[in-house]
Amino acid sequence: MLAIRDLTKTYANGVRALDGVTLDIPRGMFGLLGPNGAGKSSLMRTLATLQSADGGSVTLDGSDGPIDVLRDKDAVRRQLGYLPQDFGVYPKVSALDLLEHFAVLKGLTDRKQRREVVDGLLVQVNLWDARKRKLGTFSGGMRQRFGIAQALLGNPRLVIVDEPTAGLDPEERNRFLNLLAAIGEDVVVILSTHIVEDVTDLCPTMAIMNRGQVLLTGRPSDAIEALSQQVWRKQVTKDTLAGYEAAHTVLSTRLVAGQPVIHVHSADRPEDGFVQIDPDLEDVYFQRLRLQARQQATPAPVV
Ligand SMILES: Nc1ncnc2c1ncn2[C@@H]1O[C@H](COP(=O)(O)OP(=O)(O)OP(=O)(O)O)[C@@H](O)[C@H]1O
Image 1 (cartoon, helix red, strand yellow):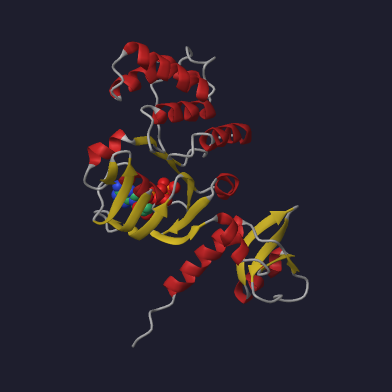
Image 2 (cartoon, rainbow, N blue to C red; image 1 turned 45 degrees about the vertical axis):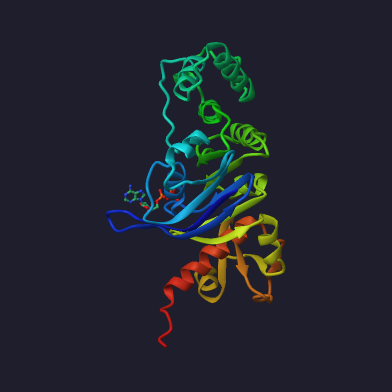
């Protein structure tokens, strides 16, 4: 549905934000997971035609055949819904009025048809009762749901949502993610996030990205399965933590009731006191980041 091949981008300051990104993104929800600075927004903005790439290609299966995303920007925009990371709204305008305004910009010129679409979207994102309220009075979650309504104007086939759940409380986050999941199976929805649970809960396929590179792509369940029987947990003390970090591949450290609990990646029991656990996507995520850090720290062999 969306084929990305060897996409590269280096900013004027020398930062290589996209370093040969190759991905096949099918219909449905696709999670793009990575830490701050991984290059997620650079990729999202490139797909949304807001910035250019230095090299590579992107092809979208449009309703009238394949679209060259890097060149045929107008065609992409007709099929695109985008919720940027820093989606600003006019605080003094009502949700209904602003959505109407966006609908006009999207080319919905017939008043009756526009009203039907706008009303339908306000119902879909559960903002019908709040439609006459000024956007400045909306909570973060309501604002994000409004952002989805504007992104869905014009029935896009490609919906890009950049870090939408940052700053939402758990209830708002759930409501927002359920809304995304319900958008439809015929469209590509790319959800960029640094929150692992967003992907675990919602995305049949995903990629992990860091330093401009794709570290893993596929189904979360396959990636988790591939780590099975290789993740070990132990509660340690703060004094011994550094020793464990030096001796083992520590994936993560979490304080539980004030005591560090570590997850270690190892084919065999690392030492006494470690308990084997079922890995989750967070273990996969940290394992890939560790692996990349190790590979990049190792000088290339001289041949
Ligand atoms: N316009 C720009 N000019 C120069 N460097 C940039 C620009 N935009 C992003 N970068 C740098 O490119 C790298 C990738 O940034 P990007 O915003 O794509 O990452 P991200 O994964 O979306 O992270 P975040 O969650 O922090 O937005 C970072 O090192 C960032 O500082």
